[in-house]
Image (cartoon, rainbow, N blue to C red):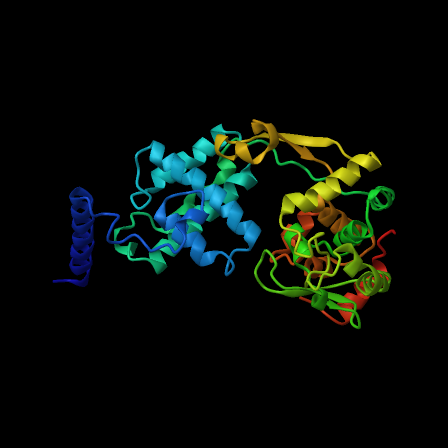
Length: 367
């Protein structure tokens, strides 16, 4: 028997085993993974729950895990409507899912995020569960899907604030803590979750740096801060922080009133969007349809979501744009943005030592 025919026989045996398990009703019982606490998830599919449980806090931050759970919940609902088991999926099914997302009005970036979640789920099933032999889709097949071929709505273009608008936003903040959060965001370009995760010990006052411990891209890194911001943060920690959350011994630089971490991206976004309203800077820059499964997350069970011009993410764009206007070279902006690909940083408009000094000399965030 040749190696080729041996391999063919093995595949045939796997398919027969797969069919046998399915017809005997034991298909999902003897190979589905164990889930410690399935009730914590909004989706009942064991493979999805096991994936989220295994990856949350390890490869996925709290916010990313919530996003993946939402994406995968929609994916499972789609398969259920087609009467397709999650292990029986073919590339045709996934293409149909993509087309359904297009029909719902999803933008290309949104569909990319959903496909990433689906891809990572199947990588997990193939490498970490007993279902690898009966899985009908190879995760690498998803790379064959070209989203540029689909007619999706144009992306929502984020508009950075100019220096005068940034000052107005600072002045509209209703507390010293909130003002400092926004200044840190505009000076460092940190993402929403990274701002909320900063601990007091992450601030190196001597080196004028903030350590970002659990960023979106996974690898911790440092960002420079100005000497002015260092002084403001020192005063905040020494004189005001404990009073903001009375008696707090918590670890977070910008605690909530109860002394704990600001819990959600939406909570911090509300702080920024409300201040932008008071400053007269806020307006709608785009809309998108809210899928039925997500509508309960919004007040009034809305069907269309309006996108604000000024959010925490706007401050990230503002930081990188002001750096570019100040003449900070692209490689240095990439260091601050923690982008893996310089092209990503170019769309928005881990280094130390001389690089950070150069940034501080050129980049002066308005106060």
